[in-house]
Length: 316
Image (tube, rainbow, N blue to C red; front, side, top):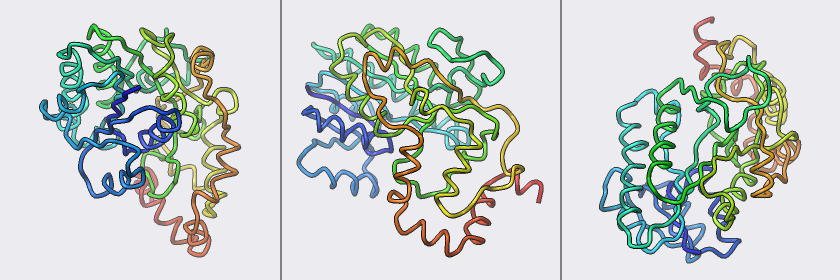
């Protein structure tokens, strides 16, 4: 099947791309022409077609959607960038999605669209009975989740065949840079970890599943991915050789992650293969030499991580 993948060279994009190629799809990748993206694209050589462009430019989007059967729309400005530059983020997130849908609708044979959303659209839910379901009301709390809710509405009202995938907690497949967002989640929070490779498989499987169209699905790791954030951080930092950080480095205000009912998405997409424990077991190989450097320079590594926490800096 001919598939356009927007945001193809991001974290989930790259993993989804691998699954799409494995399944024999003809993949056209649409992304910004940056040094990092060009380097990633070279990994796939002649296995893919690449169209460089910007979602904000309608002509770029029109060129990308030509002759495609399914569009997987992953490209989106995430937090914290969406909160630091909201107008710029909205132009890309909402405006770009609008351009994409218009370009698709203008075709004589419009493709179907798979839109990647987030569990964050439910807002903070730690005080509510479990689990989160697709019928829960949406309560966006920041620019990022407001953009996702607005784009979901655009997709549903487009007249195209669509499916919306609301994704739970996910880490980069090869942890490297320190993400300040790690400190925004209270340690007593419920989070549902989903292995990136499982998410990539789910997105690829959705392309060929006739039952997904017109549905909103929750994607997560299932019961084997449901953990508390304290355990998540402790286990991960222990493997990295850094050790648990002080409680005061983490937020106390509820964040928008939770455990979900993924029964329907698993039934349709059959993607839940890897648990949080599996991720912990493979983390040493993913970290590579960085793990040994972190152990060797542990005090420095800890100070560097804590410097990224606005809460720890405020209390120091």
